[in-house]
Image (cartoon, rainbow, N blue to C red; front, side):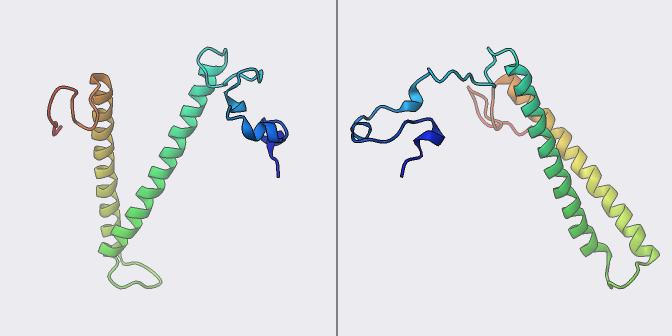
Length: 136
């Protein structure tokens, strides 16, 4: 079975099986890489792609945050689940959520600052190119 027409190759024959060169290495296809910075819309496409990836990461982070808040705060504040919550449980839930969101924001801010600093200095994971591991 040949998929050559779908994936850019020709039909398979006995001479193609003996030839070890790849048809994908050929640049005569006439297509250019849309993400290439040399193409006029390449940088714009790349920026849109990066923005979409960042947006998806934010959605995943928000879902994770809400899931963890529900899990942790419910376990800590709702002692007797029922059809309604008491005023004390409501107060506990509000305080728990605020603390959790504050902790998330602080952690996120510190992480973002550290990533920016490391990308500016060229060190990765707290290990600078010429030295040991940094703590903060």
